[in-house]
Length: 346
Length: 132
Image 1: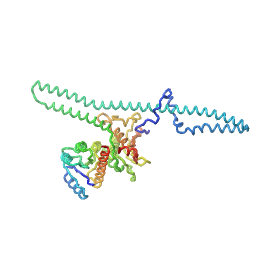
Image 2: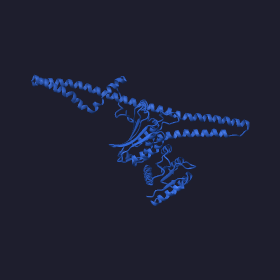
Image 3: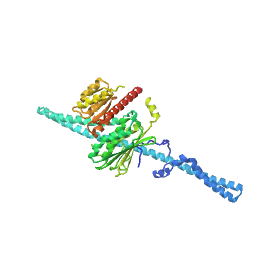
Image 4: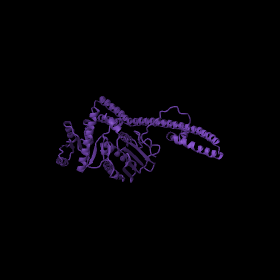
C-alpha cells in the first residue's frame, strides 16, 4: 500500500463533457482505458491481423483470386468496424477515469481544508477559554478589592500571568502555522546523508534506550553525497525518527536505512509499532491530523516533513499495515534539475 | 577566508581549550560566557557561525537561539550539549539551528560542521544579493 503524498492532477484532466452514468459504471469502463492512449497502433494490428489471415486461409481454400479478394475485404471491413467501436469505448472510459480522479482530488482537498480548520479551532479554543475565565476572575478580584479597600493583588497578578501564558500558547500555534505556510527557499550544499542520519540517530538513541527500543542503522558507506539543504533534511530525519519512537511499544525496533536508487536517494525510517489504520493513511500528512491524545502532539510533525521534502524537490510516502508497523520513505533527487537551479537565480 | 566564530558556553575550561585549538589552526574565535554576553557580542559584530551551548544558567541556549535567529537571521548556529537530548535537539532544529554537536565534541567533527555552516551562510548571502 504505497501512496505518493502529493498528487498532481493528471495531464489533460481538464477535459469536460463526460458521459453520465453511475460511479460503478464509470469505474468498470475505466479499467484498462490507458491501453488505447499508449498502444493504439498495436491494438489496431491486434484486431485486424487475425481476421485478415483468416480471410486469406478461407480464400486459399476457394482458390479463386477474385473471390479471395472480396472475402478478405468483407472480413477486414467488419473487423475494422468492431475495432473502431471498441476503441471509442476505450477512450470514453479514459475520460470517465479522468473525471473520477478529478472528483477524488477535489474532495480530498475539501476534506483537508475541513480538518485543518477544525484542528486550528480546537487548538486555539482551549487557551481562549482559559483566558476568558482568568480575565473574569481578575475582574472579580479587582472589584472586591475596590469594595473592601484592601490592596492584595497577588491573585490578580497570578491571573494575568496565566492570561499571558495562554496568549503565548496561541502565539506558538499561529507561528507554527505561519512557518508552515511560508515557503522556505532551500540553500543547497553537498551533504553527507549517512552522517546526517547517524547524527540524528544519536539524539534519539538515549530516549529510545529508556523505552528499550533499538534503533538500527543500515547505512552504506559508499552513498553518493546529495545536493540539498542540510538543516531541513536533519529536521525531516529527526521528525520521522521521533515519530517512529512514539509509534513503537517497549522493546520495539526502528530501522533507519538509506540507498541510492537510480536518480534518487532514498531514506527509509521503518518501525514495527502499531502501524497506521487504512482510513488514516491518506491523512497522515495533513496538518493537525494526529491520533495522539490532545496536548501530546499538534499533528504538525509529518505535515511539516511533507512541506520540507516537497521544498527540497523530493517526495515522501508511507507504507503501512495496521499492527505491522509503518515505513516512511523520503526520496530526494541526486541531481537537482537545472530548471530549478535557473529559476532560483532570477 | 576568515570565519567569524563566536563560542557561547559557561564552562570556562572548555572555552579556553576551544579558543586554543581554533587558534592553532589560525582561526581566532571570540567567546561569551552567557546568553546575554553573546547577544551583546552579536550586536557589536557580524558573526558567521555561533557555537551555542544548550544548557547555561540564566538564559537558556534555546532562548538565545531564538533571539539570534531574529536579530541575525543569516548567522548560522551550531548547538552544543553535554548529553543527547531529543527534546532539545528537536527544538533546536525546529528553531533553525544548523546542526548539533554532542560534548565531548570531536574537534575535527566540530570544525567540519563550522565550515559547512559557514558555506551555507555564504550561499545564503549570495542568494539574497541575487534576489535583491
